[in-house]
Image (cartoon, rainbow over all chains, first blue to last red; front, side, top):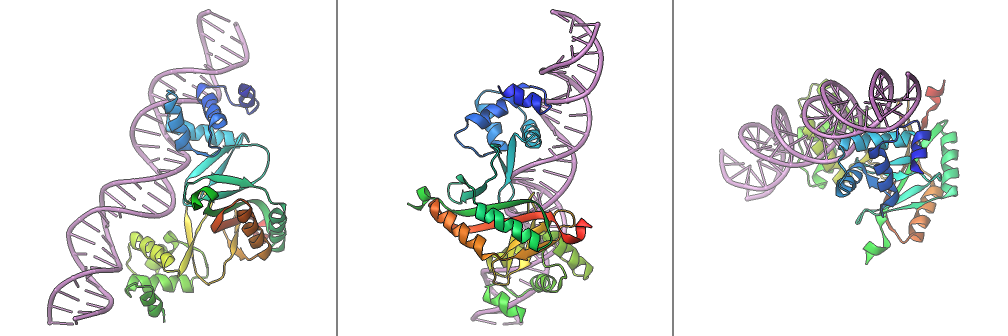
Length: 136
Length: 136
DNA sequence: ATATAAATGAAAACTTTTCTCATTTGCATC
DNA sequence: GATGCAAATGAGAAAAGTTTTCATTTATAT
């Protein structure tokens, strides 16, 4: 099943790649840092180098299998690509990440870029706050 | 004039602090990295350590004198705080930064946070693209 | 003038990510 | 199935940006 995805992306089917995919698919957290993936790997009893995790995730990003979020203050997290564009809400207490789609905002962004003479290539929007659970 | 700002912020009035403020005020670029400030300092013939630049900028941020932007991919730039909230458009070719304010987007963000049960503390929106100059 | 708490500079440390290079592996071909 | 070769891997070094440490210097209240 996933081997096909790798082959389609022009990547050899290797154990590290399959395992990284498996972790991304089975993790209860949709958003994982390279470190998270690395630790999950070791917990599964799989030998892997952290450099390989970074390489694999970067290749997956290039192949459109995952997307990378650059969170405030430096470190990146990865999520399985599901074909939908969406933005993120981050809880500053528990680091939970939620997703949302808002067509009004999307439209305004395009209008702003046009207005400023920019050819928009990308955008990133993060809303930081305290999630419902953490407010109690 | 600026000495007052420093004193109000509970910071001693020192040469490095005054000089960093001066650079932020007089630079033709509104958005400067710590490295930029450091280099400008050396060009002015002022001795300063890079660590001091970072410390001073971080203190200024805490005091509300400057704000820090975390640009995609890691490094931060600082701008003099002008009391207005605004978001940013970044040119991926020349790294020029423009600012914009959009009340529609602001309103939608608040609505989304509320809808998801988040108590919004902050948000960041960056539109990446190719600016008018760089399109030619 | 002086004491003292804060600020500074230089270098080391830290964090996250990428690179290097020798070794191993997947896979097409025989 | 054996074999050859390009691609992938692991370990550690390196890079980039930022923070910390600590001995020395400086600003400011007394």
